[in-house]
Amino acid sequence: MELTGLFEMQKRLDAYIEENNGVERDVFREKLLALTVELAELANETRCFKFWSQKGPSPKPVLIEEYVDSIHFLLSLGILRDMEDLQEWPKGKMAGDLTDMFIRTQRAVLDFGERQDRASYEAIWVHYGAIAELLGFTPDEMIRAYREKNDENYARQQRGY
Image (cartoon, rainbow, N blue to C red):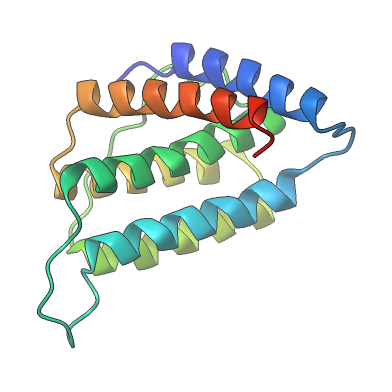
């Protein structure tokens, strides 16, 4: 899946948010924590780890919205560390269920926070690709959901979110 357009959209949104909020410092740590929170919110909506509950996962529209919340922060982190030249979603196969993927993805995010290099950044994308596959998201669905949430993020800024 092509990422160039998403990076461009995210770069514009980030600039708008930072200007709108007077941000003049490196917010890498805050965005890294935001990514881990969004990943946890997605896990919570899938309910994949809730062995004690009979309730199933949230509907697909809720899941994909939570998913693309993460993608916003993943793109932002790449922009902050000059990795927006990543043109294609890195491919890779991963075995395991959703619980495994969430744990591994959390590790990958934290690893990138420590190393801040290309290999660890691309590893996060591979993990998120595995989650998307397990959740049955198509590239078109993900792009559409990203664009919709991007528009909502602008609207939220205008409302003083």
